[in-house]
Each structure stands twice: as structure tokens, then as C-alpha cells.
Image 1: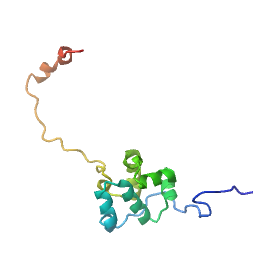
Image 2 (image 1 turned 90 degrees about the vertical axis):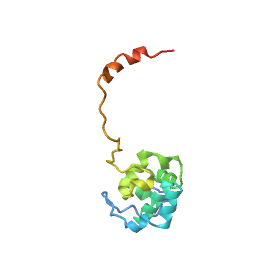
Image 3 (image 1 turned 180 degrees about the horizontal axis):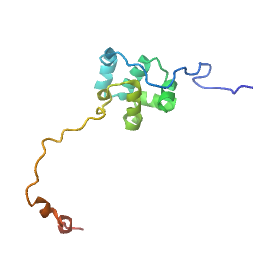
Image 4 (image 1 turned 180 degrees about the vertical axis):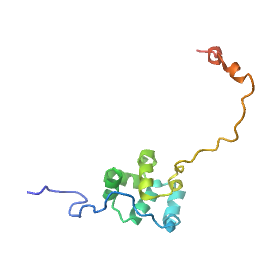
Length: 138
């Protein structure tokens, strides 16, 4: 006897997507009213939802591709605290092809500008020797 399935995906065909990169989305999606509003509202979950729908994925399909449950995707899209977790946002950003800035993330490989390099004045390192020993303790 086949196993009995209940729940929101009962009766739906199993996801047919093969693992691998998803095709790029049109740049017009990132300029859409929905995405612009989500960015203004600082709602990364709404940006993820727009990208998911544009790829034609259900929440359970996205979850399966990204290694998350459908419930986690739902919570992310509805704005729970998980929507600000880098361990969730970064993999979804990569998978869906979302520009990092739209999720409040820095571009990967971006190195902050530390400004011009400066020379350490002569004797500076010697002045630091033993500094912690001279710091008062309580």
C-alpha cells in the first residue's frame, strides 16, 4: 500500500526541478514596484518571495533546492526574525540571483575601504610594549 500523504502539498506533483543554478531573472524585476517597496520597508523576505514567484517556484520547492523547510521559507517571506539571518539570506540570495544590496547584504568579495595606509611613527611599537601591564585592573 502506498504511503498516505497529508498537508499542503498533498495531491501536488513532486517538484520537477533539477539541482543547479536557476536562470537569471530579468533586471526589470528588481526595478518593479513590489521589490522597490520591499527594499524601502526593509523586508528582505518580500524580495525573496518576489524572486521565488518569478522563478515559478512554490515555497516547498525553494526550500528543497536551498536545504530549508517550506515552513522556514514561509516564515522568512512573512517577515519573522529569520528574514535577517545571514545563514538563510545568503544561500537564497545566491540561488535566486537576487542582487545582494536588495537584501541589505554586501556584495561578496567586497572589501571595505580602510583608507590610505599610514606609517607607524618610529618608537610607536616600543611605546606599546608592556602597555597592558600598565593598564589599571579592578
